Length: 187
Image (cartoon, rainbow, N blue to C red; front, side, top):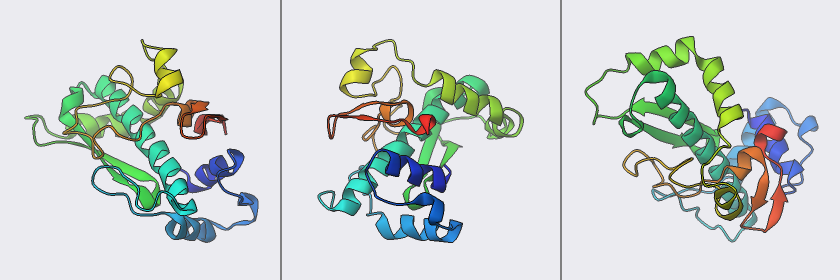
């Protein structure tokens, strides 16, 4: 994810008070390193009662939600079953890795081909089709994620399907604060 866009998303949603236009690329990277708390193995944010904990919680949910949508679209474009792909999140750099887990007898070639030949199509599908759930409007209004739209097998998810919410990407109600949140894709 683009760190400048992510910081702009935080500012637009009044989670932080930062003038992103005045920061250099290095200052933005330093901002993330200095404002991110640790996230444990279960996707729980350390010190979430602090301002940095609140920021980390928003950022982790945004990153984790985006990773799940990319992973689910990868399964459709690569032919891999959703249970054969896994994620690994790099929270402080707002990045993630999707890989073929060792439960599969396939090789990584199909996944490599998706990223080499269809990356633009993959990202388009995430942006345009990721906000769909058969359980809407209940899913979107209540939790923003369920087994039909975002959850994957718990052995494939680095945070056991915790801290997922489509509203962070597409806009909607944030149940933490019960306020309208502008989605990352709307920025």
